[in-house]
Image (cartoon, rainbow, N blue to C red; front, side):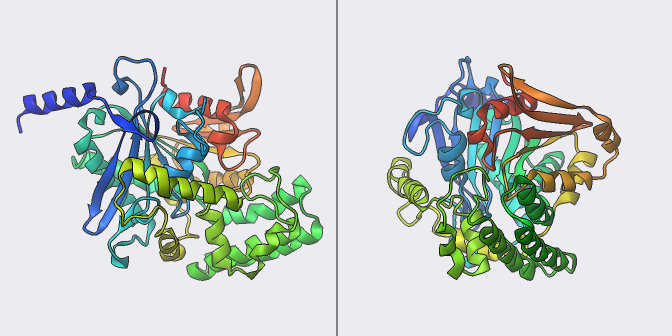
Amino acid sequence: MSIRLVALLALFAALAHGKPGYGPGEQDWGYVDVRPGAHMFYWLYYTTANVSSYTERPLAIWLQGGPGASSTGYGNFEELGPVDLYGDWRSWTWVKDMNVLFIDNPVGSGFSYVDNTAFYTATNKEIALDLVELMKGFYTLHPEFEEVPLHIFCESYGGKMAPEFALELYYAKKRGEVKSNLTSVALGDPWTSPIDSVLAWGPFLREMGIVDHAGYNAIQEAANFTAQLVEEERWIQATYQWGNTQWEVMKASKGVDFYNVLKETKGGLYQRSKALTSEERLYRTMVKYDIDEDRTKLLEDLMRGPVAETLGIPSNVIWGSQSGTTFDIHRTDFMKPVIHIVNELLEKTPLKVGVFSGGLDLICATPGTVNWIAKLDWSRKDEYLAAPRNGITVDRILEGYQKTGGNFTMFWINRSGHMAPADNPAAMSHVLREFTSFG
């Protein structure tokens, strides 16, 4: 194909419009076969910003947690897409300012699926390589985005997937395998170092007054055993013990919400999970993404009904139906940290790297996040340590704090739990501007 023809195709694509989808605005969606038998789904929302071309605004990827939670479902309708779970317009949607690409990953999450169990991923590296293949396919379909700044955002278990994805995409770009204007990666309430999160639960809940000393001691004993298993690299046992530690939290707190410790919960409801295995509790927390069963059912009905019908999803694909197996296969990898991957991003790439953390989150509590950040070791770490911690003020309201040194930034988000984009959109607007420079 001639250079001129490629340029003409790219120009045509930039001028072309998306298509009507579910909800307002122009959209595009589809599948990329990342491997034979492995089909990954993406859903692109073109920005509704007042610009002459959507390519004037950056492209933000959103990756959900789990592994097995759906970006096109939870991230889209619960956090930052143009409409909420009830079909109402969301005033703080990211789509107002930039193009947003939701990806259901790893395969088996959301609308992504595999032909049989042989095609699931089992490690973080395999997830990252699949995401690189997804982007190769995406850029083939949308070459106009090759020059558009790309920013990877994520949440929860995404804090393990996104760093390695960014690193592998950067190396693929250096090898000439893909053309991409990859610019930054930001980890939201991240499960980057799982044991640091778990060890923070007891102290955090005690200082918040949610558990007493007896409850703290029970949680800490379970958490310390988890840490021992991690130290011994007994990864499957560590995952099961995570679930046992979660149960100690539920008992001592009488059912605190893992995503926002100040959220209202129904007293005694937590006892329903008493009969579950530790892994079942873990799956319900990390993949179902909401202990409110009615709300979870509402999202499931939305995705399997109107959304699937509108997007023309193949009849053999049921949203989220493979997520349980997706999660189960990754139990060996679940408690492994990826601090070394973040180190490599900081040391060997020019990418901006950031972390944002809601102060009311328990599952990936901010104190645990601060602890693993202290373990980072790159050549510009002293710049970060010496940097001031400044307030984030939006419309004269203190929304959080930030600290920047070298190519790394930490954001503390006030009045926010695990889902920072939904809990404090004003603070997240600041984070987005810092990373994407839109507008």
